[in-house]
Structure formats: C-alpha cells, structure tokens
Image 1 (cartoon, rainbow, N blue to C red):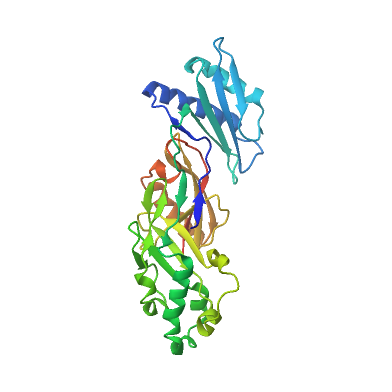
Image 2: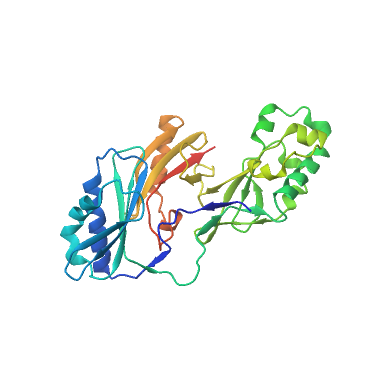
Length: 316
C-alpha cells in the first residue's frame, strides 16, 4: 500500500463559530497577510498556538520554526485582542510563498479531537497488490510478444496510463499501443483513491520494461515496485477534453503544461498564478479556466485543519 501523507498542523477540530467570530478570524488573518508581505522568506510555514490571559495579555508558543519572532507576531495581534476570549487557545499559521513575496495566514480556534481520526490520503491500489498487477501486465504483453519488436521506443517510454475512477473502475486515460493487449490486467479491480475523506479519480502511470516483458526475467528486488507505478489525483472535470492532474508540495511536476496557484482559505479564491512549463499563451488560457472554476476547500485541506500551500495543475 502506498499513501500520500497530508501535512497535519494540529489534530484538532474547529469549534463551530458564529458569523461574528468568523469575521474576526478573517480580519486577523488579513492583518497578518499585510504585515508579513514583502519579507525575504520563501516556501516556509510558521505556526503558533495563541491564548489570551485574564488580564488581556497575549501568549504565543511556536509549533514550528519561529522565523518571524514572537514579539513581532504579538504586535500585530494586539489590535485584535478584544475579539479573542481569555482562556481559549487559537492557532495561527502563515505560509510564505515560494515564488512571490506574498504571505498567507489562517487563524482559527481548535478544540481537542475526540477519538483517533485518520488524516491520511490514499492513492488507488490494485486489489491483490502491485506485484500481481505487474506480473499480469507482463503475461498479457508476453502473449503478444511477436508484435512487440515493432513497438516504437516512445510507447515503451510512456508505458501505460490509466484513469482509476471513484468506484475503482479502470479506463484508458489517453489510449496507447499496449492497451488493446491488456485483457487480463484491465479486469483487475482497484480500491479507489481517497482524498480528504472522499473517493477521488486518479491517473496511474505504469512503467513497462521491455526486457522484463520479453525475457520474463524476475526483477531483482520487487520492493522497488512503487517506482513502476505512479499516481496523481485529477480534477473531476476536464479541460478541453484532457484530465487535469494536481499535486501539492511537489516543485516542478512533469507535464506538457504546468501552472500553480495558492488557494486562500480566507477569500476561498485561487490566487497568485505561476506558469512553470508550456507555451505561455496556452498556459494563460489554462489559468483563466482554473480561475473561473468553482473550488471546494476540501480539495486543499481538511476543514478541521485549514492551511495554505501552493498547488500544481498539469496537462499531459
């Protein structure tokens, strides 16, 4: 089983606040955004636990590297002290963008989580395991070995690309030379990917080794099977008939066109786009489409633990 671990700021759940409290928290986050914009910090996150004493004093405890200074943070929180309740704990997190001088803050009131929630995200996985899948693919292709000598090297290089939908069904994502030969492999059912608690479509890329197929030689170390199979989540809707892969915490992911955004939990908008790869005109059109989409915050964080990170969107 291979899995993608979510960055977990705190294992807490947010107490349902009133509209007045939500507005107060957003104002605090906006203050922090303005205060720390323009720093030299890039690609870093700082997090703090904050409380107010009965005398109205602010106490701050860093839960990560303190790159901005507790006294500086207190200075910017002090105008908002009357909107915070003494004796309660609050959490502040500030993300410094890797590609700009922008800072993005979240501020909320956590309460201790009851039980043992599972905050892991899971990529889809074949029932029976990766080893059985790879062996079945090899056996399927070996039955067509007379046709494989004429396969262009590009097809060997690209391998197999499947779409695993939210039910675990297998579909060809882009077509390919090998797809018509994989009668048995396509019948293997998959456990669908789980992303922030919901079933999620994913693109799965499977590397094909020509020598492995034609000689039926066993790999020296089956434990490296994870290198044979790569998965990426995809958006539920397509862009111009193409699936859109998205990844987080992954600088410069592969793709013909790659752009990135930051989803701001305060504005609930995609902000600060960057083009990483591809023709500029096409990338700008892709950015415009992404900006106009209606975004659900659950694509970016658990509602119990909001945070900010740059997300990458890729077209193959």
